[in-house]
Figure (cartoon, helix red, strand yellow):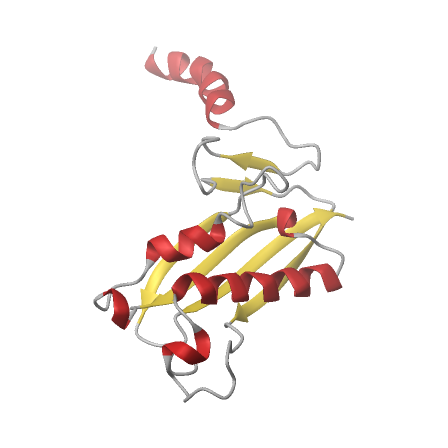
Length: 165
């Protein structure tokens, strides 16, 4: 009897958890008020692009290596990283709205007591995702790492994007 009830409720529960497919055919699962998705379902017939981890461009190439003056704070670095990703995507015919998965690596910010500056990263993130101009949001993981490729770098991001062939 329990199996029968569960089987009858599954389609209702699934419909409540997953919004209807977007016009592009990708199903984005998650609360509209959340900054990220719970999941993104990419159907057959889509091309994908895997963008390697991008690090921030130097703000001041003449500054001493590994200093905040060279790369800026977490928010500034994340904006620079997301602009680099945006350029790579644009060069391949994609947009930030096509991003379905994101991995964010943050180094502990010495100016913030050594912990990752999640709030600074989110301030930058919200300029690119979930906006009136670009409402799509990706599924995402954010983690603190010990270090990145160069001293002073606080943010590195990799993404996967998908769009209809």
